[in-house]
Image (tube, rainbow, N blue to C red; front, side, top):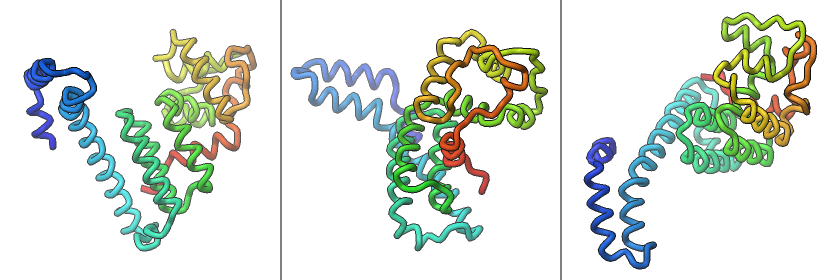
Length: 229
């Protein structure tokens, strides 16, 4: 598959465009089919292969460690549903953190460490709508002090500050991204994963480092996290 992708050059694309342009009325026809087959299909097949291979390898490790039983998984409808849904959604992204989260959802379901079928479906759809920054910020506000500890960093000692200020302390890349932070914060609130309305409100130093996720938010984090293997 990699060899085929490497052979797809700019010249190949240009040739296909020229060839298709001679008889490309209507537009949706052989031209579209050829272009999508040339440009989109090879990387899509590569993503699918990588996804399935990684899932298979980790399921095999779980089976070898007696965490799961393949025979039982064949009859586990919730597991099959999650695999199919997660696979469809995972193929839509190249973000490694989101792919890892989808993978963890599958592994947690396989090992029986997941919410019920309906909640799992909702969580997968929610993950699909999130960016990597949504995931990072949600995990951070779940326990800011623990986050700094795991990162081998000293938490900021504010006399007073805001949630925005402590998030920027954790993630300097977001220093000049107030609009993006507001959008992500509102998305997480709409999902029911935190209940703090104002991200810029001034509060005590202890207040900015308080845990902020709801029980539903914690359940979501557990669903997309996995320390089994």
